[in-house]
Amino acid sequence: MKRFLLTLMLGAGMAIVGCDKDSSKDVNQAADKTANQAGDALDKAKSNVNSGVDQAKDQAKDAAHAAGANMEAMQKQIDDLIAKAKDAVQNKNWTDAQGYVDQIKKLETNLPQPAQDAINKNLADVQKLIDAGKQMMPGK
Image 1 (spheres, rainbow, N blue to C red):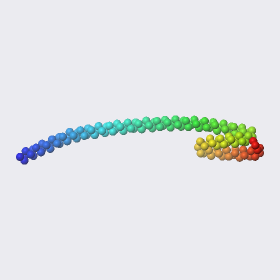
Image 2 (tube, one colour):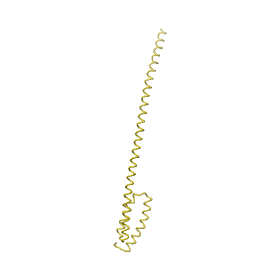
Image 3 (cartoon, rainbow, N blue to C red):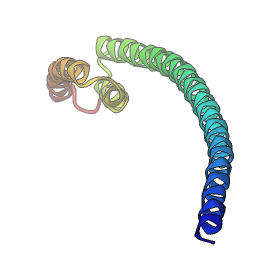
Image 4 (cartoon, rainbow, N blue to C red):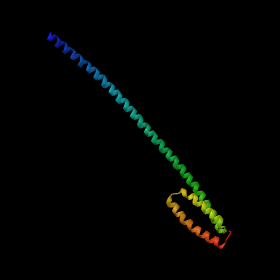
C-alpha cells in the first residue's frame, strides 16, 4: 500500500511538473508578446515626440519670421517718424517735432534694451534742442 501511494504521489508530482513546463512556456510567450507590444508602443511614442518637435521647430521658425516682419514694419514707422521730426525741426515746428519724438519713444519699447538705450540717448539730445527751440520761438 505504501508503495502504491508513493507511486501515485510520484506520478502526480511528475504530472504537476509537466503542467508547470507548459504553463511556464505559456507565461513566457505571453511575457514576450507583452514586451513586444510595449516596445512597439515606445517606438510610436518616440515617433510622436519626433513629430511634435518638428512641428514646434516649424512653428518657432514661422513665429520668428513673423516677428522679423513686424520688426521691419516697426523700423519703417520709426524711420518715417524720424524723417517727419527732422522736417519739423528744420521748419521750426517744435510742437510737431515733440509729438513725433513721443511716438518714437512709444514704438522703441519693442526693441532690445541696448537699442532702446542708444535711441533714448539720441532722443534726449533732440529733446534738449526742441526745448531750446520752444523757448526761442514760443507758440510754435
